[in-house]
Image 1 (cartoon, helix red, strand yellow):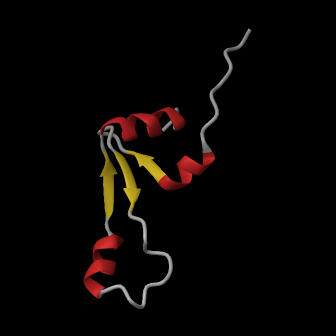
Image 2 (image 1 turned 90 degrees about the vertical axis):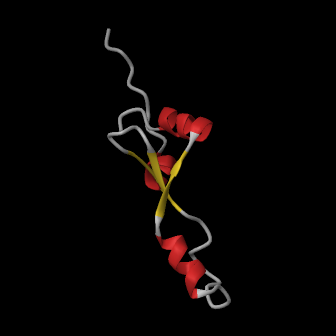
Length: 67
């Protein structure tokens, strides 16, 4: 009998990418609305991606079994 495949957590798949190095890449929050009172410097910093560390990265990797 065939082994059952694990399902990918679709919400996590849309928000995170697992890189070849094993790091988990994500975008920063607070960049979707209410931008008029935020400074240009703050909005510029929010554009860049960042990486998860430790237990958070491990949890996300469990949710994304085939990436």
